[in-house]
Length: 243
Image (cartoon, rainbow, N blue to C red; front, side):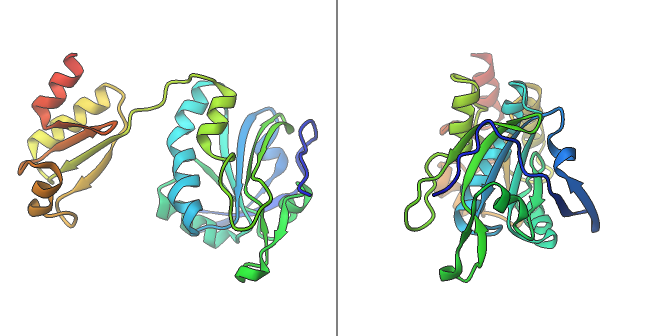
């Protein structure tokens, strides 16, 4: 039975991390003392659910968490420092503190170390999330114990709903752009001025104009989508913000 440790302190361990190509020891005290911290732990870097959903959504919502009093968001996995450093770069997880629990000491102390030998993974962390205040666990969301890799309650949106019910989510913005395009530059500037973070897909080395027409019905750049709504180009974006 996985242990719910609400009301208890996090385990005291020292993590061997990698930063900018160098080793760095990071202690539990460094991570938690005097801070309000969200932790999410997962089975492994570069694995499907972890890379497609769990890590990216926490990275996306970290600015919202910080508006509601959270000092840091930490991802912990039973992987070595090289793997975790490479994964953070691959995922562009600039908002997240990535911590390798290489020997599984933290996960063991949390009562979350499980055997994934059937997958060839060895000992790994069960998937969970928690809110920690000055080293004391205030809330845990532990995935149900059932076959496979359940992902039902440790997600970023569940944590945000617990921490700040009704919190305003950041808009989901995608801009399809062309390098050197003055209208694209203007659109990105306007998005930034209005506090709209965006994901950019460049036509150079990315999609073709044929694909752009098939996807958007338009043959010019930029093409902008906000929360699923096709805003079209720079003029459409100006009209959107004018409303």
